[in-house]
Length: 167
Image (cartoon, rainbow, N blue to C red; front, side, top):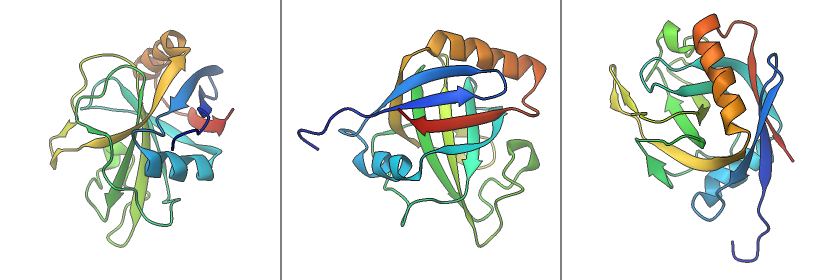
């Protein structure tokens, strides 16, 4: 990826009209960045994590020709990390996660997540460690987004969408 210009996206909580800017980490997760970039724009119902702690996410049908390898993985995302997860079959087919609609034995669901505060640990009580691919980093607007995410946690996610689009 030498010589490639930096790429940026806008991440939004649509109903709350809160946006932030993220830089794609093409040097660390080139396959994942290419898959996400080529699929943009993306928008879907937002959820707030229960176990990972300070995370919001949206679920999408697979959009890459094949799922990216586990590049630039983490189980301890930091504030501003954008992570990519892919779940097959009924791995996390629990209603409270929002996966029950999309995940069936013969399907895959893509989870695009934004981490907005410290002390996150990707440990799920049902399946154990859940490493994610860090493919982007918020470079502008994280404080406002974190306030919106806290409001989402306290007042609810119903009717809210998480959106990703090219800048």
